[in-house]
Image (cartoon, rainbow, N blue to C red; front, side, top):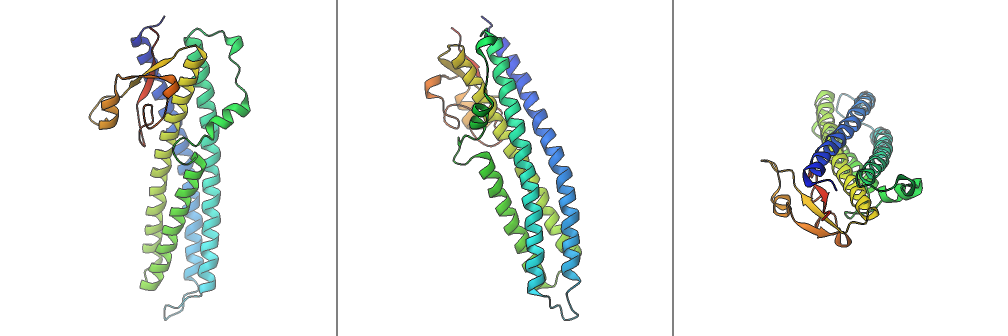
Length: 254
């Protein structure tokens, strides 16, 4: 049976692959964000073209612009959901198949159904599903942009200032998306790993924290502790313990 050092090395490799997935999605979302920014600037120009010399504007046009911006955000967040959904499915399948093979499980008894994996990916493991969290982020962004527009128009701000403020909100949304992708990837990788342990007939796992200056007190306190698989619970005794969690689990084979 492979020793702890082997499993730790494999966990480090898995973490690098997960980070690669995160960077890939973030890069694709950034491209979509640039397109969205460009379209929103057009909407702002349309809104400002209606403002008269006294600074008056049509409330109808404002509502029209807000509706167009919401449609742009819907499109952006639909793409985020699809990208993350596909990435999580691939990460689960890759991790599960790799782990059961490393644990010596016969590959002929190792078939995963697409419907099962999809169900796992959509699991509500932290209060909301990943798609619900994405739409919650979208709702907050929409509200923030509406506030920027409404307050900016009342204060008579320039289109340039308003555009910068909205751009800042959009940039913050990418950081939110990256954090979500990393956290959900940690969850699905942990879930695939513990499922492979169950398949191999194991009954326990070890919590393994990535120890450095950025390690949370929670993960540090759990490092090295052994738990029964039947008690597996993300956020309590298994990663992710928090957003951007870098911890993992190792098999207890003795």
